[in-house]
Amino acid sequence: MMMIGSAFVLLLLLGGFLLLLLVGGVFLARRGEGDLGLQEQRQQAPEQILDQRLARGEISEEEYDEIRARMQE
Image 1 (tube, rainbow, N blue to C red):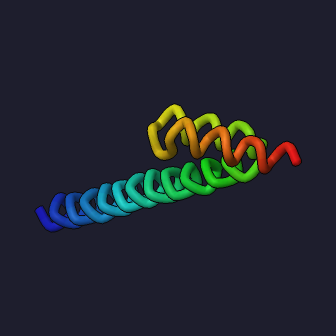
Image 2 (tube, rainbow, N blue to C red; image 1 turned 180 degrees about the horizontal axis):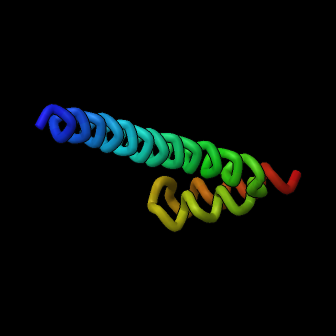
């Protein structure tokens, strides 16, 4: 009877450890995705970023034209 109890405790500990590894892996994977997004954004050309800001409505068409003209000088 004592051996069954010990085996059950061992399985609980092993299961908890595996669950901890899984949660930690998911956390680290998501953390890494955010870093990749920043790297991609840094590699974009200024013109692409400006186009995206206009498309999202962050700047008006007048601001877009003004910034675009300054970039081409």
